[in-house]
Picture 1: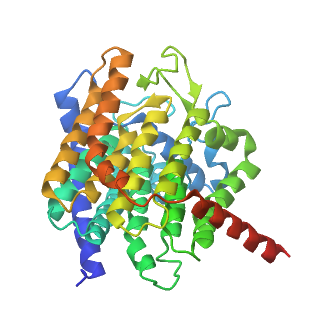
Picture 2: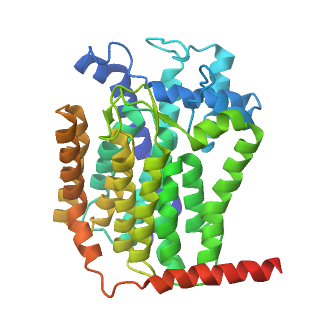
Length: 423
């Protein structure tokens, strides 16, 4: 018997309030007290202010121009999707109305907008995260791990590094929507009638509109959708973001093209990839990121027509975890979504869930050390293998292997349908 929706929302909201209070306490008091050299003032992440700048443009009626937010010398710095700036527009209006100080473009040690903006960002992203993690845990049958333990793990592995330390609320929202898409798959497999509100493809499209890395999950989703729904799912999951981002590119090509097609990365800020000069002021990571789509395609082929949710969750997790290995500059929060999905997939076994949590925590902690670059990347790879290894053994043991003709047949049938409709 399912839990009533209002109870699930009430619990997620209550846990979200606790997580928001704890996150803001860490930002305002705990981090400055524990590490006064690293956090001499409030821990208000610089990246978070770029979203608020975009939200100001939304509040002023300038939604098509959000990729001009944070512009310095002709380069765009806001590079995420439009959903979070839209959600944060009321906070931007309050900040402008009351004249609150913000730490952009000039540094402000204790910006008066931060207690409200930081709390709003944490709450808006944490409630969907806890709600979708609960739904996905129930869908995979992961009742051997208590819900409170999963919520605590999500706070440690996702909210702390992603939202509290880096201010990337949009990444947490994207993960929540990816998890929501996965939780809806069993109903689709059982033949539930198509419904836009319950569509996994729509959830994934919204995730891409929060943060573009969610597009890596599109090939895997299409591969596991039932026959007859794949073309529609692909059209929604990929088509909706293409239309929205195409709109921004058409209206404001100068800035949107830099933000969406050539977003800069800064090697001096964190761990630069081995093929990147650590002294470079900025690099464009688009070519290396495209390699991640090759992996996504391989995982999609391997999982073609699978109906085991644990295996499918593991495939999604592998793609999202490996994404960080193809970035020109690695940050800890890149790996949170993959670790979280591996953890939910492992909740059917206490021992395996504990292993994933321990290995995932060690992986994130590895970002705090700075040995020689080759040693650091070898260590990161080993920790990724430790996190993903137990689940990947099950995925690789799938028999029989999918046939390449299955995927090519889908592409051929899709092309025929498109030609018939155009005729």
